Image (tube, rainbow, N blue to C red; front, side, top):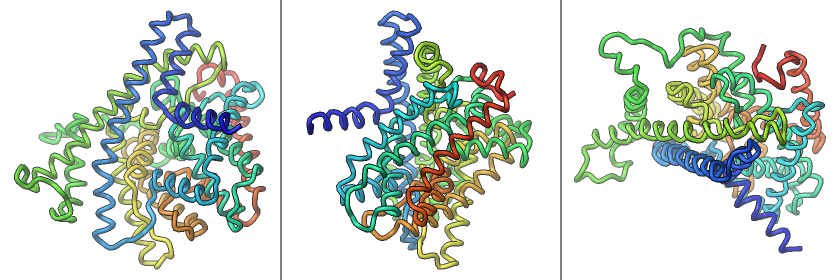
Length: 473
């Protein structure tokens, strides 16, 4: 029995949890179902795997370069607090669940969630769910954090392993969220990507849908952030690479100057502090360019091959993939989202300090860039640069206040060092966790039922084209 369980956990961690391998396999199966030759399917697997790895190099470079600067800013001014970063949230979850002998249950939650997502798509005629969530690393991360949060507020006092009931309900809630929210944002993603044939499967699906819906109310989509013609010498900013490098040098460079040269470990025999600042900030443009190269490579394969899965296995299904894939369709928007989201988080953090909040927050780079960058992409499509600035700023406030609120219910165990902080986790799962503290397992059960109503409402809005064009009519 232990051997079977280990095989199962290895499958979860070493296949489903490895996004490049999972996506490459999906592409391979899709091409086989389309009648492609095996070597053509293998080529698709390789391009998808390599493309996603290139994307990971870009995202990893962004995180490793700029996360320490954001954290140093907090340390410089003596803010000892919990970090709103997905990996700090995941670490809190895995370390805590280990202490109650429940870490292995994360794999069960993930498998239940994924199986439920497949089931909902298979019975799409009744469920109206079209999207298959295949962002592997996010699947594991969210399963761990949700199990930790619900365990602590519902069953945590006894420090016993999580119950079977909690594991099953957590898995069903996670699968419902993946299915419903990635399905909700299909039409908006099609508009953002000019009909690329995928949807977003990440940490801010509900937030991105809100950003797209509200964007037109706060801005004008004709004033697109990527199509701003500037006069005179400012015309150099019309080039995305130049704009990213210069804007981040002004923004992050100012922060580095405030922190002081003694904060950074660099070779003073090779760099002036000013040239070190320039090189560090220019890496933002380097990593964004790398990221976009990877996106273009694997999205082309995924879009073409998934038609086979959609036609033969899960008819009418749409792959839900990493949010960074959308950045290639609005290269300037993520920078807008990062900067204005940062301002919003700073305002919220200083507000917590002034109010002497029992929980203080440290901004995390992943939340700042990938969450607010995605919101800016969707806001820009419907409301232009004004929306791409205002909505991430408001999101920054929500990310800090929502995370601080939920952490007041989760702090206590020494393993807790942070929370996810992404938009959906500072709103939807923040509320679920707090309500579960008072009403128990009934809260996630009720949320499952309520979310499953959403695709029914979507279907009624444009039933004639719902399973065909994926466009909002």
